[in-house]
Image 1 (cartoon, rainbow, N blue to C red):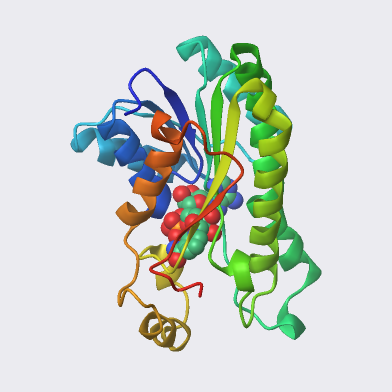
Image 2 (cartoon, rainbow, N blue to C red):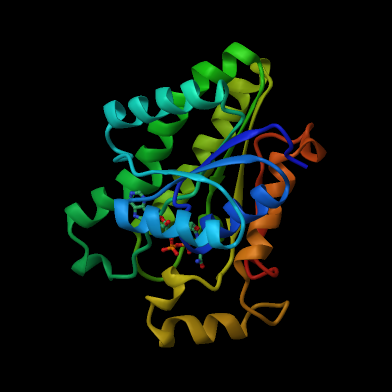
Length: 245
Ligand code: NAD
C-alpha cells in the first residue's frame, strides 16, 4: 500500500511508533525512524534488522529546528523526497494540578505540540514542491473529553487536533493531507508506567472489552497514509474500542 513512499516516524523506537514502522515496512515504504536517544534508536534499528526490516534511525532534538533541518536535509540527499511524516513521539502526565509545575507543563507541550510544529514546518516545503504529501499526528482519546489528572497531556492533544484540522485546510491546495489518529488505552510502555488503579477501571469501561494493541493503531495510520484515504483530510480518527463515548 505504500510502495515507493518515504516515511519519517517520530517516536519510532517502541510502542505505537515501532508498530507503525513495522506496518509501513510490510507495505513496502522506505522508513526512517526517529527516537530520543542514540542507544534506543540503535537498539530499535537492530531489532528490526533481526526481523528482516532495514530502516534508518536518527535522534534529533525535536525542539531544535537546527538539528531537525540538518537531519531532514540528509534524508532528502539520501532519498530525494519525503512523502509521509508521522508525528508520533509523545509523553503523558498524571499529576494533580497542585503537583504539576510550570516546567512539567512546558515539557509536555514542547514534545507533544511544539515538536510537531517543528517537524511539520521542516518537511512542508519539500512536500509543497512535489504537491504531494501526508502528515499524520498521534492524538489521543483524551483530546475529546480530557482526563481526571495530568492536565498538560489532554491539553497538548487538544492542540494536536487543532493543528491537524487547521493545517489540513492550509495545505489542501498543495495536495498535502493532514490527519490524526486518537488511540484509546493501548498496550505500550506509556500505559505500563501509569498506576494500575488508574488503568484497570478504565479498561472495564471499554465497550469492545479489551485494551488496544499497537497493531490496532498502526493499521489506522496505514489506512490514512495510503491512497485509500485520498479524499480524507482534517479528521481525528478514534481507534479506541468506543471508549470515548
Ligand atoms: P511510548 O512511551 O511507548 O513511546 C514513546 C516514543 O516517543 C518513544 O519512541 C520515544 O523514543 C519517543 N520519545 C519520548 N520522549 C521523546 C523526546 N523527548 N524526544 C523525542 N522522542 C521522544 O509511548 P506510546 O504509548 O507508544 O505513545 C506514542 C504516542 O501515542 C504518543 O504521542 C502518545 O501520547 C500516544 N497515545 C498513547 C496511548 C497509549 O495508551 N499508549 C493512548 C493515546 C495516545
